[in-house]
Image 1 (spheres, helix red, strand yellow):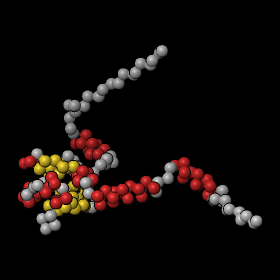
Image 2 (tube, rainbow, N blue to C red):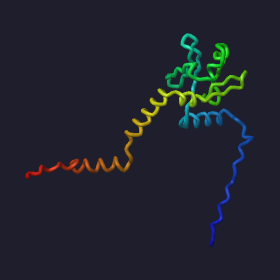
Image 3 (tube, rainbow, N blue to C red):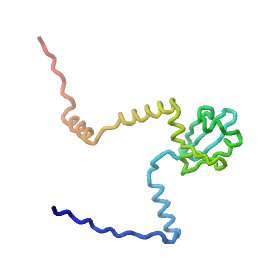
Image 4 (cartoon, one colour):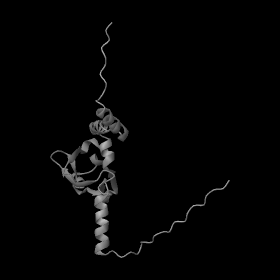
Length: 155
C-alpha cells in the first residue's frame, strides 16, 4: 500500500508578538464578530428581600434563582452571597474565600421549570427550521401552481 505522506505545516510563533493599538483593535473586532458559544452572564445581584440571586445577561434579560433551591448557595451566609462574583467569562458564580465555583448552566439545569422552558424554546426553534432542499422544493412547487388539488371521486 502506498500511503500519502502528510504535508508539513509551518507553525506560526506569535508568542512574543508586540501588542500595538492596531493588533489590539483587530483582535477586538474579531472577538466582536465571533458568535458567543455559550452562556455568559454580565451582572450578578443578591436580592436579600427575595432570597434570590439575579443573574443578568448582555441583552438586559435576567433570571432570578432562589437561594434555598440550591444546597451550595443555601449554605452561604447573606454576607457571602453578597460577595459572590462572576467568573470564568461569566459562566460561573465564584466565592474565593470558600474556593467555590458554581456553573450557571448547572444552576439552570437543576431547575425543572427552567429546563422545561429551555426544552420548549429549543423544540420551537428546531421545529420551525427548513432545510435548504425543502425550501427550494417548496419554491419550485409554488412556481408550478402549488400542491395539486385532490379530485373528488364520484362513486
